Structure formats: C-alpha cells, structure tokens
Length: 357
Image 1 (cartoon, helix red, strand yellow):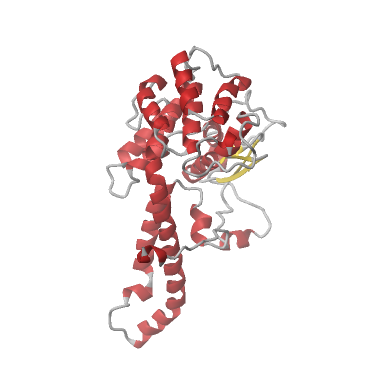
Image 2: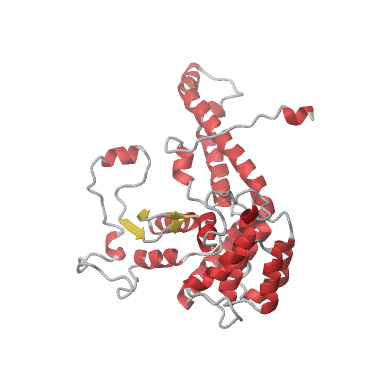
C-alpha cells in the first residue's frame, strides 16, 4: 500500500567512531537495551539544554545552553540511531526466542528457572520447532546438532525423524559429528558439563533470577538467551581468580611472585605508550591489570562477549585474540563436508534444501 511504499530504509555503519557502539558492542541484546535506556535518562538529567528547554533562562544559563547545544544534538541523534537499531533487532529476535530457549536448555542442562533438564525432556518441543517452516534454517541445524551432542547419540526413531525433516546438507553435518569423536548411534552416556563449569553457570543464573525482581534488571529473555557460559569463560574466570589449573594451562616460564590476581588488581598499571590517548578515547582504563587470551582454532562472538563480562566483574582489561572468528554458518558448512556449498547463504529465515539450490 501507499503507506508501506513511503517507508524509509536506513543503513548504519557501526565502527570505533560511534561512542555507544565502542563501549557496549559486546553486551547481550537486552543488556545493551537496558544500559542504553539508563544512559539516555542520565544524559537528560545532566544536559543543560534539556533542563532548560521549556523554561525561562537568564543570560548566564542561556550561554551555558548555547555551549551545550551542539553536544546535545549530537548525542540525541546518536541515541535515536541506537534506539532504532534496538527496535529493529528486537523485532527480528522475537520469533527466534523459542529456538534460543531450546538451544540454551540443551547447552546448559538447565532450564531458565535453574532446574536440571535432560535432553530427551524437550524432544516434543524440538520436534515441533523443526517441523515449523518458519523456524530459521540455521536454528533447525543448531538444534539438531546440539541435541545429538547433549543426548550422546540418537535413537533409530530420532534419526528417522531428522532424515524426514532436515535437508541432506544438515543431515550430513549431523552424521559427521562422529568425525569429532561424538557418538551418532544409539544414545550412550549423555554429554554433561563438568561440575565446576555447571556450578558456575548455576551461580550466575541464580543471581540473574534474583536481580529480575529489580525493575531495572534485564527482561526474562536475557536469562533465556544468555544462560550458557562457554569453557573459555570458565577458564578466564579461573585465570582472573588465580585458580587456573597450571597443569592444564602451564607457564612457559616460571611466573613472577606477583602473578596472582589478588596482588595485581589494586596495584597494576600500564606503561604503554600513548596511555593518555587511550584514556581520552575511552577505550579502557589503562591502569587496570591486563589479561591477554588467545584461542587457537577460533572463537565465537558469544564467547568474546562473555569474556568481556569477566573484565567488568574483576576490573581487569581483557585483550582477546584468535586464529579465526567462528560462526554457526561456517561450522555447519564445514561439518557437511561439501554437501552445503561454501557460497550458499544460510541466513534467510527459510531455506528448504540448500544442496538443491
């Protein structure tokens, strides 16, 4: 209709020059949205222009408003941009919440209320999601793969269902899990997280559930969509607490006597060049102790986001490096062993069978 044809489509390039993006790009979506709203409220209270926008002003106040006006306009425009992005992203994420919930259930072995879950418990919900044509292709593939991993295999009935409902490329990826040492035959022992890893997830989840009572806390979707914490997070938290297993992660050279985090958190400082420039650019507090983490084989965006969370919690600067950034699309294509073409776009909401396109 005429109203639809008049809609304007805007594109934004998010980079280091965007102050909000620079500071909050690693946050979970709902965490970002809440912080953005808090920042807007704080800005309005602090802004001279906003305080006297509708009131009478003397000469001194008018001069202050004139000086503040350019910054007010700049920040108002910036906030509006990110509010628009949040609105669009929220609309796109809403139909994906059921799939995200199941993926978190399977990865954690815990529900959003912190009760223990076995993979088979969600089988009826998983079948329903996989049968829905509107479920995104990558979500279907992720659910099938994670179900087989967490269940420790698949029964004949489950395999028959997957073969009927999934395309040839995804089914090849499921069967090729055995190349990674994962059982794809009759279920044996379910894959579970080691006790310390799951206890860490439980502790964080219980804290988030408790914070939910606060009006400013993230919405329920934050708990659903941000429940799982990776092994990278687990290792980095142990590093920050100076509890990392030195046999599993040995030192190349003997550590200095002051290597413990408890000794460096309050006294650490940086001798890097251009320190003042980094402080001015708000890229971080250069007087914080620094942890450098490098992951061989690749790292995911979710892993990076969770590790930066440790930086905020322990007041340390985190520097992350890796040989690659892993995406679900690349992982699926790699597991399919050529069944899914490398140039095939798997991001559209519905892809019937990419092997036949």
